[in-house]
Length: 460
Ligand SMILES: [Cu+2]
Image 1: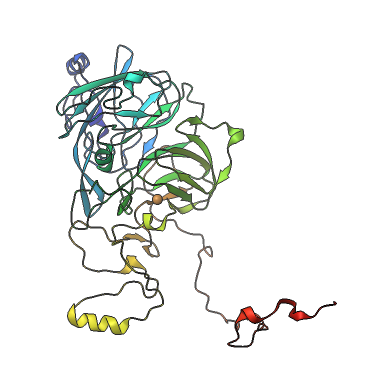
Image 2: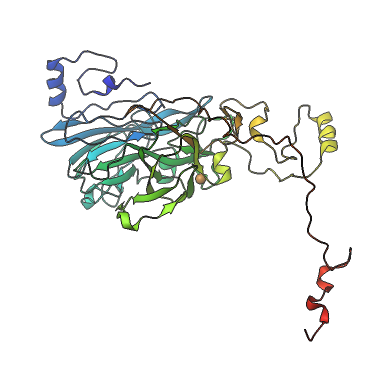
């Protein structure tokens, strides 16, 4: 896990614990703030604002919040665009591009009305820019290479400065060679908190981005020319079982802010609860205009903030509803063989290819298939639950609702212990004969189309 201390702008390098007054003033005097680096793909604890105005910080799933320094009343951040190695899930790493050591980059959290200055250093092999998706800002700060600014060439540092004018959830990403750079994982979340921390207050506030990669089994680098047929579907560049659960206390008011910077839509679905769509990247929806949902479609380039009361204890699935987005790498050209008995064929192929395995003749629970995998590949589903393999991967995580958690305790409580008699179980009693519908008027073998409606009996 990350040491929060490493993030303090104390002028010392990561790992140095001593905070000396002389070092602090030296750092404060530096022209550019340090760029903290994150080495972990875990979920960092919320960053309680060390200076500036107070707010209720968010938790970024499998990511972290970027520390800042105050300089003459301006919040200064330093993003470094660079190649990173991201662990997608235990057993699989990917060569991505990101910011400050990870993909996605750190979440930027500010308060409505804050003046923000962001230094962006380009350590990529090609030019980049940063667009602040959803912000209302001066045109020249909008980050569209060629249109509103020159490209940030490799080795150069640019500075952006604007006022975070209204509260909401936003994103940042390049507007330079986007297909490659977004396809390599360059993106981050941005949360602007309301001036009054009591406004839009919730007990637990999560944020993450949806993204996707095409990484050939056995390789490490995404194919960025793939437009739609990605094979690794991710929440903040993590695939289940690499995604952390969202841990909440029973009866907490919970907000989850989900941005989509992949190239297709993701209908996100909650189990055991219903939510309201409370905000978009265009701002907060007035309470009277919100409506209940259990699935919200998040289109490309959209953000949706959902809110609900976590009133049902348990381990609740939370996932994209596209079945192939809750699976990890698999071939796309697999025919549907449900109902086909090909045991004879398999035996014959086995003579030629020892170890050959036919997929899916019984519908195929793929989690249990243990074919030898190439190096650096995730099984299609790999999560272990209290009742066996969890038959989902990819864009899947859980909301773990528990009674009696301490405020701010986000530690994984383990698996839910169901009250006695509340788990679906095998029926071992008598099975009644199935009741079948009465035979139709059509005789066996007679085409149904020849049966005349009403049978020609007029004059009822
Ligand atoms: Cu999806």
